[in-house]
Length: 325
Image (cartoon, rainbow, N blue to C red):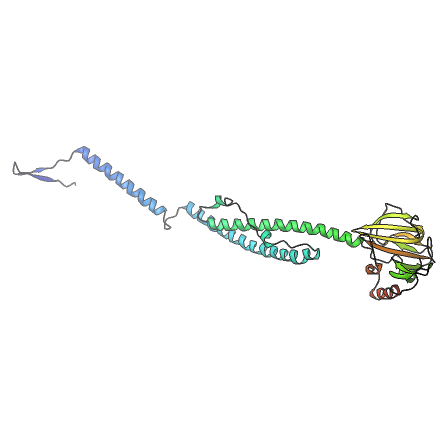
């Protein structure tokens, strides 16, 4: 039951009952309802922004965020492993591969260079976990760039390796006459007595004595440049251009087993021992040229003889005797 209120009427000297208008009652009721609703809304807003009140959707999002944090943590551990492997590969590349092929190492200023665009990661900023995503993205980008540089370096090394293989095959590295067919090394590179004039003069190659018809072998891969008898004194002779500045000459042959323009490989039979041209007896006069200059063939016999055989040939070749041509 609502309380009845009175006021004192001084003119009539009596208490008079206060009558509240219906409109005012309704207004008070509406004001109370609005205030209650506003208070309830404020309490709701405060509750949903505190950790003590979570909706199912909030809990689901929280679990997803924690799962993403875990995934990023695992990703960073894998990046550590990849980074370590890349470092080891860069170390081998600079200190083994590039050293072997006589190439300058790639400096860290190039390998470790980042990205200069300051706006590159702008879209990743301003979120609750921006730093985690930002740091991981930067690591992935940096590692991707390092691997791209390393890939280009290995492509270069692969090309150099192919060239190195071609070079090793091109170098005149074996004797032109095999030991089983060889009688002796009659004369080596250097000053020798000319068999016709008996004058001491420069002998630009080595003379390998063997029976007429003994096979003569190409000492390295190359292309036959000449197979004729037009050069003075050499008789039937073959010239092979090996590339990389190397040429080899085989003189006084009895006959050819190749033709100009033919590609030959080390160990192919290109002719046979004879005594054509300016010659004292059956032998193969052999020369090696590098960049247009004659060089001692003895320095190249590493492909088919042992150390003991090399020492024996070296002793015979270094004797200043009479040459056969």
